[in-house]
Image 1 (cartoon, rainbow, N blue to C red):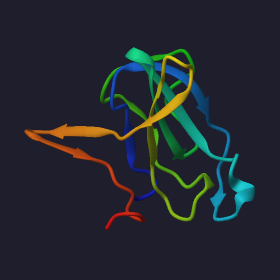
Image 2: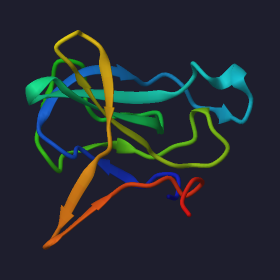
Image 3: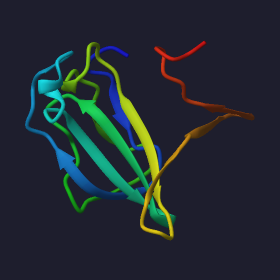
Image 4: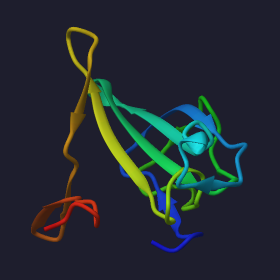
Length: 121
């Protein structure tokens, strides 16, 4: 994904957290806490994270967003070696523990999952 690619909300939700102060990233762990991101809360204790965003995120904490709404642009912030979107889905289970969920998307009649280009076989 090229830097500056538009990033859209995958699902309606409430903006829980926005970090939008960083302009740099790199392959060194000193960049680990220096990434821009948005966390959205959805129904059923589901959360999505959009990380490594470019400075200038378009949503604010407490804002409601609709599915397909532009939230920002891909960047190169935080601990990373190339521009990309780190997209994660989590649920908060009945024990108040975070569980990662493999995201599935429907395009037409096809359903597919996301896979990292690095771990893809």
